[in-house]
Length: 456
Image 1 (cartoon, one colour):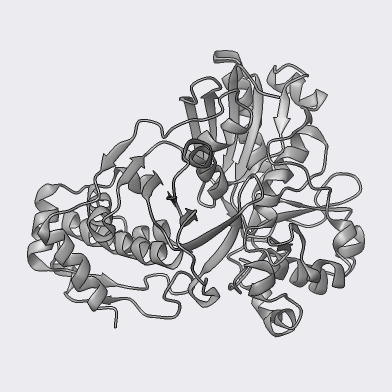
Image 2: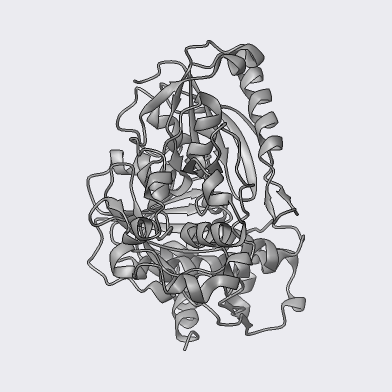
């Protein structure tokens, strides 16, 4: 069912949660509210503050509806998370923060159980970044939890359940480096059956399927119509990808930038993905395999800037190119294409101004993106979504380093993609694109070449 009115999108990112009201006809954002996605220290382990998030969701549903009207609700959320629901519909255990290292305590045992990369397209990741490792650790270390669990649902579908009372899963979240999904055969991985988990997973529904209307109590508290439809939901990186899949017939890559920088290549050159370099197979909303690579770019940028001003200008770019100031990977060595490699500067960063430091950090992210594009066989146009799309140093060096046309959209790409699931619009283009042609100055090209030479 396609909505012809405004669509409220619940957009839960790892760092921040947003409520976004999107016009269902032109997909423009009408209103945005955000709050930190806080983590509660425990007990029994660090977990997401879902009650605080729920209050935030209901409050903004009510405000959006009172001010503009809400015709439908869609949901997008980060991966590497799932909810264990008990028979009463509550949480059988808190939703684990995937950065908690607890699952590493059982890494040896889990490694003997997990399927290989050839089956799942899922690399072995630390902490709880493989949802299968989370489940194994929780069920092993918390007596009775498996029996208390009626349904396992992926994270976007947890919020869909709270809205509708209907438990479901869908393929973009199941296919997000979980170890739980076989993207080649479009079914659960062999591990799920071997461990007796299959019957615990809620039924799989289509990504854009309407699960049902909101629950009566939510309608009363928010003022929304009791018939307001709720979409099943989508993994956030795939929400960013969806508008471009629908709008483009030629090869392209989408670069989704937030806490994570996710590179997804559609119809690229054939490559052999390397699981040791944080490459993986994502699953699109239509169930297709999407070669992908990633690194924690937003987190790295924050770490590099250490609270300094992130403002940069053309003079800062010129100064950095003149000095040849560079940073090589990895600022966050637990993920990305250069795992375990320590970061290395070719200068004393204390000698850089804040603007110059921001340029070097941006250049670093651009070159890391370039590496990930190569790993996924990228060809054709590049579409940058999110914060880095409005970063001139990043966009200019990415264009120069790749020689590919780069288009940026600084809007909330995840929210726009999620809204598309409930919208009558069928073939959207990028919103308010700002394009860098596939070229760059001689100085930018030389910088990129020297950075690549310095990797060895």
